[in-house]
Image (cartoon, rainbow, N blue to C red; front, side, top):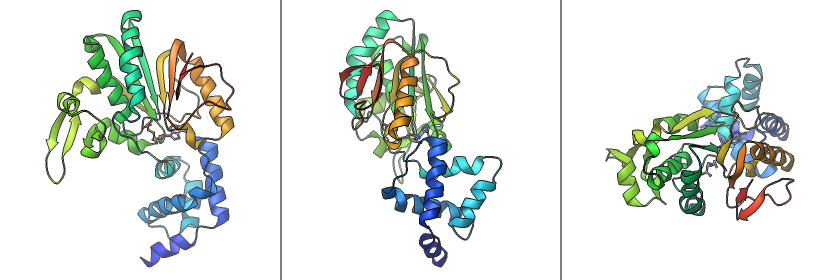
Length: 276
Ligand SMILES: C[S@@+](CC[C@H](N)C(=O)[O-])C[C@H]1O[C@@H](n2cnc3c(N)ncnc32)[C@H](O)[C@@H]1O
């Protein structure tokens, strides 16, 4: 407890600035002053796990780790990963009613990218809708790419096991149809069915880095990710998304995000929904 108090007290302005600069350079994430307490408590936790004495020692440890592994773990500790199935349901209505029926008619292969997928609830929700709207989905050339910066959340996504909290916006019949109840006590735990799992490829990708895939994608989800980036970073990213979409393809942002003030070539369709 004493050690924890010491770690808490020793997060100086200089240290915060150094961490902020590193995180911005590596992940595009802008840590403003209001995030200082959050960053402090998250890095203090990591410092304790490593049995280091204070944040200074931790920063030195990150700097001197030539494998780059601790940098990844530091970004894991700092990133915010809140998500759940069918979060911001208007996008899923749009997918079910408009995008997927049209893709089913027009295209042989369907490609969807969940960029910043966190623990996987977003791409699994898309996979559920694909099965619901396109009965032959399992035998068609349909793939979902799901990427995130954080290895910690990707491990959860690959495991595909979720507690009831993740299903707060999921109609119960869909839970019954696409998940197996694998544990009742101390709390219920569900595992995604193989039919969903087989559609998705999970991979670590920092959106700031070059992207290995060529696309094109019919739909790109990048929801509640760009809020952490500054305007120039958002501008670059949005234009890279545009280049990777098919004509008529859609970019879906989080509902608190918009492209207002961003230089882009998209056509506005509805809130947080843009079409190439
Ligand atoms: C709040 S979650 C959003 C999850 C999901 N898209 C949703 O809306 O429910 C934001 C995710 O963006 C990821 N992220 C942040 N910066 C990133 C970057 N530079 N490259 C890739 N992913 C990033 C975080 O790791 C986190 O999992």
